[in-house]
Length: 449
Image 1 (cartoon, rainbow, N blue to C red):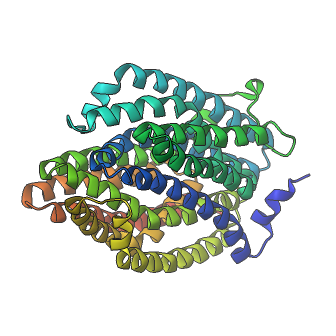
Image 2: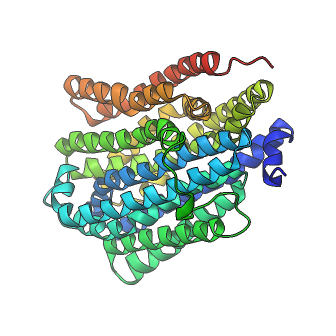
């Protein structure tokens, strides 16, 4: 008997199916956004811009391990949703167990590596003598939460593949809400500063991971984390990695690009680095909302693809693109008009504010095309098309962004013009995503309606 939670994938009207899947995903992303903003906001209340810069410098390392969770989360979601669409529930359980145990093992190894190499890692990502102590302190503590971070990021995606978008949302809300509540207490109340921010982050991920584990161990879930269900063969490891690696590469390259832009901005001083970090947070208001739209529809598209329902697949995609484009325009206007008040909430230093204000308005120029970009990325991933996913993932923050940043850095002498590398990249990436999707659709979705 087919799981009732999957009925909305197959039979609900397209607008209802899309909205019911993207609302929990968008709410989850908003909570992630609030948690990211909370760290920077309450650190900013210490009136120490070096602390703000240190957290910004440490962020790429954090993103690197979020990418591992994305590898198993996006890769697992794509494979599991297609397996369920094909009626292969046992394979779905084996895939879920594979994602859990492999991700957990990587998390424990990463935790130990950071503890052993924290100072050289901080120097590698751009810490100066003024920020090294703060960045090292932050990363040392955050490392303890990496296994929980990977589990949380994995199953906030994977659980959506069984039609339980609200459960996935709840886990994210619990973890991020805990972080938001603890931030002012530990940063300002206890006076622990960056250490308080790190502890709040770890505890947030612990609570989120615990919630998902409780669901996966209950009878409500179709999935499994039992060691006995762990499988590597039978398309499982290859199927997860084929989509997961390209998806995670985007985050890995984003981490690397953050390191590069931070290093570029250090020639303009630590206040430029602090301003850039805050501008990225402001830009995240639009980015996270639109990522939520894109990731919310992926299980639905994957199910339609697995069931070979071409007509419904196209209808879902068309509705999602229209919705994402409208939201993109709205968020661009909001973030551009309110850049000043948003930046001032994080930065008190006049120089840092000037940089932050300028960078925020430059970064949000990408806004109008971000919705299309993220929907196209998830549409390609939903088909299991590894090569197009890989090309798109290494292009946006790698093959496109890094050369453009290098060229801009050589041509321009001002931080403002160098920051323009990001919106230029995003427009090129959006165009590339549309081209790759058209190629993918024609190649992989050839069955008649």
